[in-house]
Length: 265
Image 1: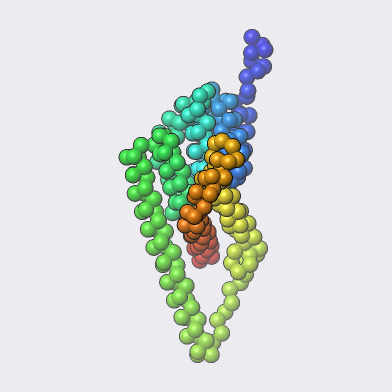
Image 2 (image 1 turned 90 degrees about the vertical axis):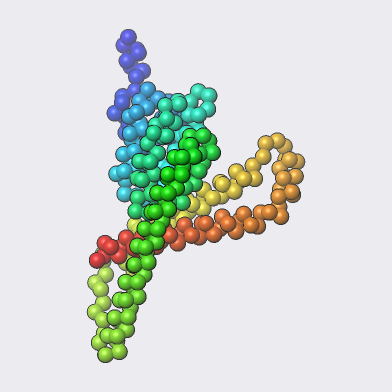
């Protein structure tokens, strides 16, 4: 009896360890798989560990981390849909998917991330067509709201520029804003690091996506044959992926700029 209790993991320690894994998730598939296997190992605490995911999404202020957790959920579902997995985890994702989407795509951020993962979960049979349609409708609304917000910010910027130009014509020099401590051109070092980190992580994820498209089972001859047959079609796909990456980076930077304007006002 005493040896049985000695082998039981402390629930508080398991929860803290899992939270730490979620907090430090990166674009690496290895990190996501490691976190998913940790949850599988402690499946007896499934509801508690699933609540950690929800809490990290709803309370976390880091947009990058919310995106990484969203990508992790696809690996989480993969691991638990296989033989020896824990089906209850998949049911929890299915049950709380609307809440998860709302947390990850709040304020219109991470919409493309959510769309990619939801599509992947649909392809795996985790989500049905009706649920995916409802999620897509909500994502489109968020995109439209974000577009209106960014449009208003651009309009205000042009209005401010016109006011400054008029003042210059009358011989008045505009009073310069006092620079905030630790900021360069209105963007703090921390914000710049977050932007750079997101760009690198998106690049890593898209690289893996391209690798998975080319992956084949079998020997090197099969891979060479496929590359030879599909080589002429690569250009279009590459252009689409590159355009998506550029759009995501631009949207991410514009989102941070609009947030910084809000903080500065």
